[in-house]
Image 1 (cartoon, one colour):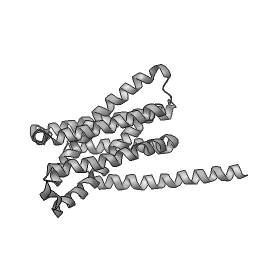
Image 2 (cartoon, one colour; image 1 turned 180 degrees about the vertical axis):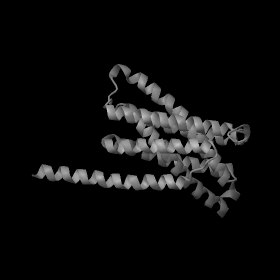
Image 3 (cartoon, helix red, strand yellow; image 1 turned 90 degrees about the vertical axis):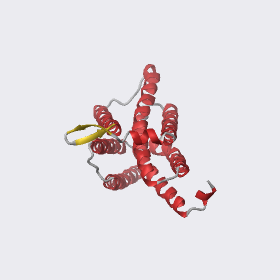
Image 4 (cartoon, helix red, strand yellow; image 1 turned 180 degrees about the horizontal axis):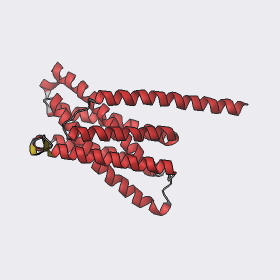
Length: 242
């Protein structure tokens, strides 16, 4: 451990990996925010905490079992000329789940089905946590396999995951509240989830879509939506003054 502290390569790997974990965590954060948007404020806050805690525990557990993780990348059969591993199967299933969930939520938004009744609140909370477990596992495996390729020391990987999860925990409630306050932002986030699901599906079939393309598109669309929100707010203020 002392050798790592004085190793510039280890610090470089830590900074790079932390930034990458935060970027990869955006996918998880958007999904958590969308999934908890139909819950009450107290339940949503609790569900976000549960979701991020699960993501953290999954990542640490997977880091502690690196041999098993690397075994997931070994081919188990061939389909359509592609070697399919357990990791590919998990990514394909996760991608299909994200696409289906985002499509369902878009349908509910269009149809105007927003509220969760009091009698269904407990069941809704249980369903949210169950879905968080599924998607946290998918994103965690993708994240840890990426981490293994960038760092050699387990301590560096764990430190990067811890720092990234603290950042995501701080950002979770503000992001979730912002999405809840602005319906058009929620629809945009759902469209992002479909895009992320397609990327996971493509990865499962060894067709890699550079994440930079996706995140730049998300950043650009997010910036446009931010200006739309500001413009609507200014128009509302002008209307009240009149």
